[in-house]
Amino acid sequence: MTVTESAYYTLAELATRLKVSLNPAAEAASETRIYGLATLASAGEGQLSFVSNPRYVSQLSSSAGAAFIVPASLGQSENRPCLLSENPYVTYALASQLFAALQERMAGREGDTNSEAGHDSATNTGMGENKTLVHPSACIADDVTLAAGVRIGPNAVIEAGVSIAENSIIGAGVVIGRDCRIGRECRFQPNVTLYHEVYTGDRVLLHAGVVLGADGFGFAFDGTKSVKIAQLGRVILGDDVEVGAGSTIDRGALDDTTIGTGVKIDNQVQIGHNCVVGDHTVICGCTALAGSTRVGRYCVIGGAVGITGHLSICDKVSVSAMSMVTQSITEPGVYSSGTLLQESRQWKKNVLTLNKLSGLSRTVRNLEKRLPQERPPESGNEL
Image 1 (cartoon, one colour):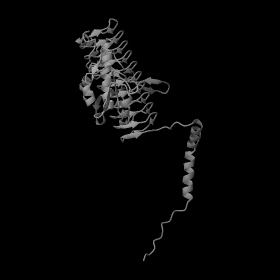
Image 2 (spheres, helix red, strand yellow):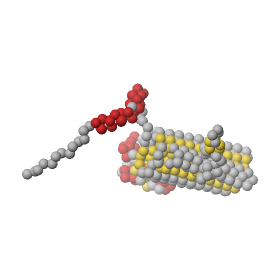
Image 3 (tube, rainbow, N blue to C red):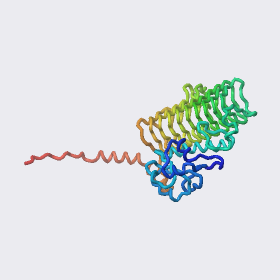
Image 4 (cartoon, rainbow, N blue to C red):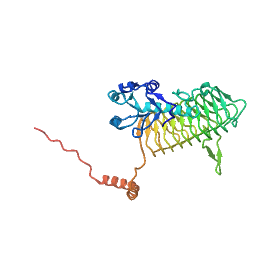
């Protein structure tokens, strides 16, 4: 990732913004201009790279990068310019946010309003005046409240009773239904849809095609047909939530569907009505949570996991990819289900054997019943 040559941070500025220190080589080169990020293998002049695993520190000598984020315990003696961090991967993540904001600023858009831009040619464009800007093609109800710094893109539709807090960015084609409340510094990418009465916290990022607040899948069968159950709850997102492209979070039937602070949801995830997802949990792509599932805090749900409804998962649980969760999990830990990949013929043999296990178990029990009972050894008189 590289921005234009007119936009950069110096090493000294990066150290300040990222709250890390410089090694002696970096202090001597503290005014070096950094224009972007790259991997160790591809980094070149003016680019910053990182090493999160100590085993790769030896590769610094062969990298053409200008500077490196490295573990604080290892970088002090390096003769290459290094930013010393207690957690290099997190520092890299924060650096990526700085350069992403700078890149968007150079493109004439304001990105992450939390990040301060570095040296750039857009400084005097009026981007920092905190104006509310609405595209002429947007359709906005008369009673909508737009706070300072809000930006509304082309063909957006915002219905009655909506309030959008400071510095939020609503992309092209976004639809926000009646009585929604949007927090500060949110970013909705193109074609996001919020049904009525969806509430989001601050700094929420919704990627393209996200749908919040569609009806949950609720029906009552009267003997001949399915009768729809009206979904009367809401969807509520906490602060710092990110939802990936094409994901859907259904509104509650009676209670709300609630996504906690700091939750990160990947692409094409389905979360059913009345679900509760605890703070800082991560849900990977193509996973589905059936209705009324409760997931605790700091969980990691792998890709393509299925979780059946009306069960609970406690805090700090990791579920491996493609697992099927059919009962509540009450102890923290790592859980898996399913079979590992095998050559097809071997897999078929194993499946046939698996189908015979029930009969084999009965045979073993019958044989055990026929065996003579083991007699305890006779105790003798010891001299």
